[in-house]
Each structure stands twice: as C-alpha cells, then as structure tokens.
Length: 592
Image (cartoon, rainbow, N blue to C red; front, top):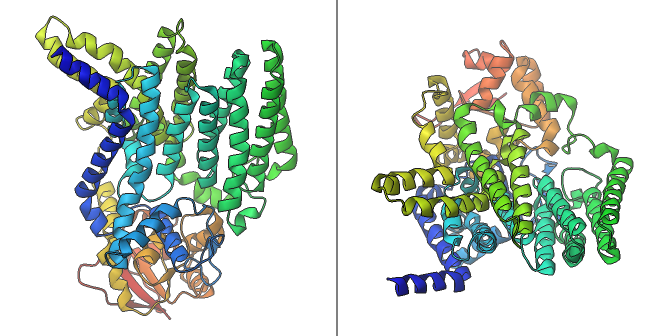
C-alpha cells in the first residue's frame, strides 16, 4: 500500500502538466456532452456571445481584420465594437476546421461549443502550478476540483459562452502563477505577457493588471534581488501591449478613447514599462530609496494620465449623462455585491472570503520560510479581488478563481487532521463538512434551503418570457419574411441578428449609445414620437416580446408611454399585425 501510494505521489508530481491537460480534456468532453442541447440549438444565452459570433461571421465573410464595425445593428452605418479580434481567432479556426467535415451551420455550433473550453486549459495549468509551488507538489488535483466548483467562474467556460471573459480569466490564472514563481525572470515574463494579452482582449481586467504590477514592484522594493523579475515584467508589459495593439487594435481604436487598448492605454503601458525597467536597471541598495523611486514613478504615471487624458478620468465608456442614468447605472452586474439579493450575493461571495482567509493564514504560517513572499503576493491579490466585489459583482468570476490557492491551503491543513481523527463520525461527517466549507460548495447548497429571496411568480414569468423569445426556433421563424430592419428591444437585437437574416437598431453596447437612447425614447414616449424614430432608422417591422425583462422597465418608468399602450392592447393604426407560428411568444408588426 505504501509503495502504491508512493508511486501515485511521484506520478502526480512528475507528470502534473500532462495529467492536468488530461483532466481538462475529460472536463471538456463532459461539458460538451452534458450541454449538447445548448450546442445543438446554438443557445448563445448572452448578448455578447451572439455579437461575438456575428463578429466572427463577418471576418469569415471577408470583412477587414481591423474593421470591427457591426453593420447589421443600426444600419446602414452600423457601429464600432470596442473589442479586438483576439478571441475571434480560435472560434474562426474551429469553424474552418469543422467545415471540412460538416455544414457551416454545424461547424458554427461545434465551434461555439468547444471554443469556450480552450482557455480553461490555461486556467487549470496556472492554478495547478501555483498550488504546486505554494502548498504541495501533489496538491494540484484539489485545485482543479475546487475550480470546477466555482459556479461564477466556470460559467465563463461553458459551451456557447464564446465571449472573451474566459480568456481573460485564463490570463489571470497565469498572472497569479507568475507572481509566485520562484524564478524571477520567468515569473516577470508570465505576468507581463498575461497582462498584455488581457488588455489586448479588453479592459475589464485593468484593475487586476495594475494590482499585479504593484505587487511585483513591492517585491522589488522589499528585496533588490527581485530586479530581474521587475525588469523582465516591464519589458513584457510594454512590448506585449505594443504588439497587441499593432496586431489587434481596430481602426476605430486608434482614436483617443478610454474603453479599450487605444493610444491612451498603450501610452500608459509603455510609460509604465519604461519607468519600471529603469528602476530595475538602477536597483539602488537602499530599500528606502527603492520605495521613493517607485512612488515617484507611480506619481509620474498618474500625473501624466491626468494631464494628457482628462477625458478618461470618469467612466471609460464616455456615454452621455442621460444614457448613464437610464441604462448604464442600472446594469445589474455593474452594481456592488451588497446591492444584490442575498440569494445571488451569498454564493458568489462565500468562496472568495474563504480563499482570502486561507491565503492570509497560509502567508502567516509561511512567514519563516522561503514561501512567504509567494504567499504574500497571492494573499494580496486574493484580498484585492475579494474587495472588488464591493465595487461590482461582475468581479465574482475573477474573485472565485483567485481564491482557489488559499482554499487549497486551508484544505491541505484541515482535511488530513479530520481524516486521521480517532472518532469515526468526525472522520466521515467532519471531513465532508470541512470539504464543503473550504471548497465554498456549502453556499450553493445552503441557499437552496434558506427561505429568503425566493423568486416571485412575477420574476419567474419574466425569466420564462425572456428565455422563450431567445430560442433559436422561435427567432428563426422570422426568416419567412424578407430581410428587413426590425425595431425591437435593445437586449433582443444581438440575438435576433445572429439567428435571422434581419437587421436591428441597437444592442447593449456603449458605442451604440445614440441608438440605445432612440429605442428607449421610442418605447417610453408617445406613439407619434415612436413612429418618427422608427422611420428615421429605416425600420419597417416592429418586434415585441411581451414580459421580456427589458419591457418591464418601459412599463414601470413610463405609464401611458408607447410600450405601455401596446401592453394594454392599444395599438396605433400605423401598426399592422403579421402572422407568426402558433404559440410563438413574439409579436410582429408592419410599420406603415
């Protein structure tokens, strides 16, 4: 038995990378099989996933590499998407590959099913490497198990979730592995490259990129032997951002905008990289001097940003005050976790708290060992990610991912003692309870039985209506009518253009701000105002989804407005009802 255990331990240590990839392949096969209906029906549940597919389709149909304008929203001019083509590449590659064996429709389905799981491999490798270095060389399987239990994080890797969040989470996992890498130059390169790739994809992880850079600078301030890590990081960050901008920035992103890797943020990254490289090259012996130089460098970057780019001191989206008030400020995922119902907030925040506590305890326990620096870096990063939830709940996936190392450290310390306890009930029930606690799974289980915040019948009706209207077969029935510009809800636009040959007016993207306001004004104002707006956009059809979540906003905010009148069956004479299949949740009208 001891010999068998020894062989398994050696195999887990020696072949950890190969076994991690084998685990990823098994997880990929399971998810594709388990979610096959999503793949079969191309169930892209989020507006961003549908827009990503439209972006890939445009690329494969010959649209320019640097032209990211979506021409089927707000036609004929369209509007620019602030994303880059980085995430388009694996999806497009998979579509081209599967086209060799099947139809284009099935190639798209298979590509959208598999593509989100590709970055999961990097996320697993990064966490496994971190846990191997800081906890135990054979503790990495526990990291994978805990990762698979993070509901908010794993949601970003599931089949059909083809938007860019999975890739950014993968870069975050590589970042935390680089922060605790004992080899300075390699660790600096990993953090710098992962940060540059993340920024090339989008700015959502900018706070984490800044925090990672601050942690590397702190390591150098404390220990001048970290100069090699700082120098390589600086070159990787500045150089990688430059390459990312040159290869992936759209034509529109050459403007001085604040919502993507534009010349604004490229300048910041190059300046930060140059200053940090100079600090690493100087590398003064005095810790106080190193601290003073780092503070001066940070102050110079902040001062330059304030003076050169004052337009970016507010929200990066740069929308009008009206649009911010009636739309952007009401996006649920942009609200702090404490403004969400307990039933939503508790499962998201429980595991990050466990992971932060575990990382802090592990750093304290390692205070007299060589691992203290690595654990201190991970603890700072994990606590920062957890506190980000107090800013926006959309930080949940990142916070849960970064909590894995701390949770594994807790489990590695707690579970063996329970398993060896003299009392059988403690060994059995105590171990199960301990695992549920440190893995964060207790939150998801407990919330099912807590009689609080249970969805009301009204909420269930709205959710059902929203889901029904987005179904592939429901929207596909619209193609019985000739291609037209359809006036519909903002949140329905991206899904409609992805599933039909029609065009729409708006999608929930800030660069589409004027069109979003037009939709809001049309449904909220008078029938005459609505008709004028629709005609101005060239819309010939009106599509409604009664009880869809967006429609409830128009009714609640503007009693007696155009949409409220429609909901009470008070239709103007310039709308003519058009037939759709029986039991369709949609309502279609011709605009005369």
